[in-house]
Image (cartoon, rainbow, N blue to C red; front, side, top):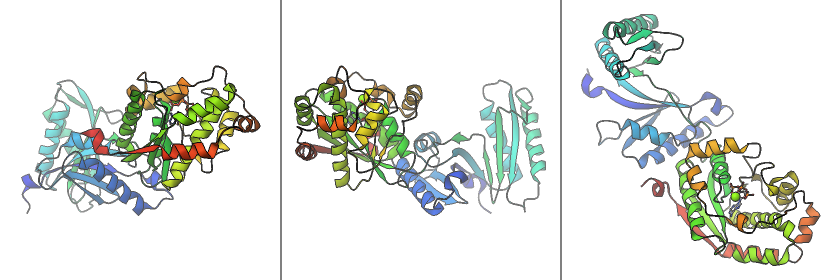
Length: 406
Ligand code: ATP
Ligand code: MG
């Protein structure tokens, strides 16, 4: 017989959704999720992670006795690919232990002295256990009512607190189910080159593609001295915030000044924005190709500004030889801002340092450009030369998750 005191464990249960797995390779999904959780938790201390019955269990590492539940829960909340997580208490299949653990948990839940409704939900997987599901629920319900007559009453429809008990080879007891970010584990959806400006939209676009399992790299067009060192630092900070969700990423900083000045010289003012966007795509995809990255990601959304009309987007797309993902295309600004707040990028995005689009913006840009307009505007530009020059003058910064946390 194991010692009940040392056998007692606090764990975190991570549930993988069935729907997410439809049509996907389950083994690969679970392996990638496990790897990402491990990587994320490595920065928080020592944890042991294992897989059983399509669920993932996190417990304290060998050198630790008790699980730092809060730290682990906070960290796993950044990881895509699971449906919900619960802090769980696991102990031997013994009714005295069950009673004492339920009372201890009830004591914690009702600590504020207020009146709370509750219910008991039992899942009896182990059919050899002598008490049936209903008997267990009645036993625990009565136990709680006896010990907390002034604080607890039963409401099976809309309880404030639900005590979940799973009867397996051990008892598993918990009250909380914390929703995960869902999506797919990063690493399952190929790689994408995010065009990251200092604005609100592009970090959110990167986050959304990461939520579909895409590993990210990023590219920023820096027009020094027209855009400041602070503007660049802001983009570095945004990229660091993204690593919480996407894992490590490389940020490519393009020296865009000579290209921007050449555009100023050679392009009609009303076509400047669109030609600049076409140059950005050409350069971004040249870097992406070097890195063997097969897609671009941008924060554009339909109709938001002059360069984001259907015609302007179509003109931009014509220079692309790879897909440009625009996950915000059908979103309104309010939802984007809400998501930016949720992922923690909003405060950095609204710092007042301008990006090049604002410095070189035309007063009256053509909102419905034709491809022929764009091609004519580019006639006197050395497109290949400027592209190569910008690629050569690109610096790469490797951002690690640890930079963000420590
Ligand atoms: P954001 O809020 O992301 O800056 P925006 O609404 O300001 O977007 P634009 O300035 O038209 O829109 O830019 C559209 C998209 O082009 C951006 O979301 C981003 O993906 C990309 N982009 C714009 N400027 C830069 C830049 N300096 N470096 C890298 N990408 C850029
Ligand atoms: Mg912008």
